Each structure stands twice: as structure tokens, then as C-alpha cells.
Length: 219
Image 1 (cartoon, one colour):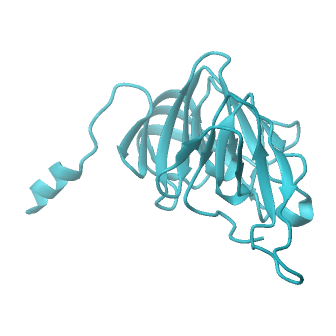
Image 2 (tube, rainbow, N blue to C red; image 1 turned 180 degrees about the vertical axis):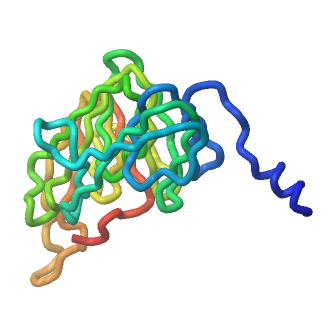
């Protein structure tokens, strides 16, 4: 393959509006105005853009999306201007969700890649996960209308409750679900299963998204 063929074969297709996957791991965002993206996720852009970081969680919704295990902040930022953004995160696969007006989903803070300015969002901590054990599993509650992009290690699986999941492998769940946190029992004296904390989803409606990977490893 010569250089011209290589360039043509790998050039992104032009899209008029809306989030689009260039490939499984790269998101294209045509924008006019403002879009919210995870800090450090921009790999390229065309046009004019100004990036403004949000570095404080003061006031609730405008700050850090905290890592579920370490508790360290992963800042988000606003991209403002006109053009096309290309964003990705460490080779993780991109999933695009379209939320209708008043439709909501709760997403693990580490898995939020981008969302439109029309999306309302607030940050909350899942009750029952102690700060010492998991840094307080912090999720972002996103409400439409608008598009949201999340990332997953590998292909996600969507499950219906009742289901019990590992917090480190849990990506998102529908807004009508409220998980409780349980502690796995010791297999035998002096030995644990390695799956100490578990998220328990009950009810007959809704869904839970899990990935074939544990973000923080064993706790």
C-alpha cells in the first residue's frame, strides 16, 4: 500500500452532526458551541477550539469524576468553538448512547468519555462503599436529551436484574435502579474469594452494563 492509498484508507469519513465512531476505539464529535469531554482524551481536532478544565467539585456537578478505587480525580473539560474533535481513552472501546428528554442513565465516572452540552449531569457516590475500601464508587447521573459516549474494556454485556456484579466491572445502569452493596463471605477461615465487595441490583425492570475487565483489580 503506497502513501496515498494508506491516507485514503485511514482518513475519517466526514459527518454533519452527532457523535460518530471512526472505529471501535475512536470517537468523532462535530461541534458548534460547547461539548464536554474527559480531560486528556483529545487526540486531534479540526477548526477552532478552546479547552477549559473543570478542576473542582465545589457545588456538586461541575468538577471531578472520581476514580472508583483510588479516589483520585479525573477532571473533565469543556471544548468550545467550532470544528471536529477526535477523542479516545487508552484504547478502550467507545459506546454511544442517545438519551431522550428526561431519560437518564448512571455511569461509572471512570467510563465517561464525552457528552453533549444539552445533557444535565450530577455526581453522586454509591452508598455502602466505604472510602477506605473503594474510594467511594462515584457515578455520573446523566439526563437527556443528548448523546453520551462511554468507554469499555472489550465488548460490554447488558444484563437484567436481579443480578450481582463486581463494582470494578460495572460500567452503567438504568436510572430506575438503585444498587445496594454487599460483602462476600469468606470461603474458609483466613481466606477470601478475592471478590470482597459486590453490587446487588434487584427489581424486575432496567438494565446493568458490565465489561469483561476489572478497572481497579482486586480490592
